[in-house]
Image (cartoon, one colour):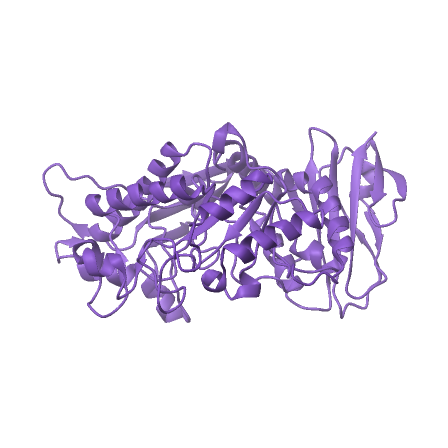
Length: 494
């Protein structure tokens, strides 16, 4: 592709059909594990030359056979960079985020799980799952979903042993249905984890259908979703489980690197075919599940946030944006970075103090509290999430970072979410534990210079007025006495 860019900058978002997980530990491994490649070259005439596609393709097609190319989205824009990012965010919200039942997912969305207390679902049972649901509600914490993660299925050696997708009736004698019915009666939907592509020795798929699998005998294998028979079986089987067990939200994980399996399966004149067909099948599988369950949301994981391409994000949302959760500075940084591209995302929350809860707060929050301990400060949890329910809808609006990005403990981090149509929004700021600065001014964005805004401190309840010009120019004055500490402001145009 060739396009002049003297007057127009190009923001390119790669969103290709080759979307599987790459588990890598160094640059050499990463170079081998890529499924797509892109070259961007600007020449002396100020033109941008792009060369983009599936990394390895050298194949013949059989009569009647079809393949597809990667999906590429391009956004053309003029002006400041953040205008481009917010055009992208608006496009994501308007045309890409799934709408189960014709509606965007509610924001905020609260789920809760017991995996952190019971070592994943392998130690869960009907009794303790019902207990946790009841305890959250008893504490006045309204849940949208009860989350049952890895390990609910029949296995002999722990949750990673995947390939037999049947409920473990030793721990759940009445199936997961007993838990989902209990939750539904209390207004709580159910979310259940699956990882269908990874198949380990000794499981039903491994023993009964080796012809559906990529890989060497004795090792874990990859279910070939490019095989129509395998995909049809998986679709029907998961559909049956969703219906029989009363599952409302389907969560799919993917904890392996598939590239070697695909390439080992290709003949010399068919390089790239296994990969292409598998990913096309993966998308077709989700499309059929969504057709059969039009009100169901899908959560895409892949070892935490490693399948966030555009094709996937049109079908699913990343409710766990990374497997690295709970530590506050990392969570601030995750929100800071992912908000440029993905408006709806989630992470875990297990804190009681204001600073950490705000650091962890997302459009989707996964509550990870030990509800067996009744002596914990659940009053603080109620207050923090009552606050979050009021301001979280702003996270689906325009986004502006107000500080730089840093993983260090000696700085501040802050951002603004703005609803320009309503003339309102919020600012969140964090003073990390080694920062020597107690007071700062943050220059805001997207305000009308001549308008007057009421600015309210959520911690003190105090409201002051300032013009848009003052907030854009000198900036919003913020004082944070504690280290670490945080502040939340809301603003509204008069």
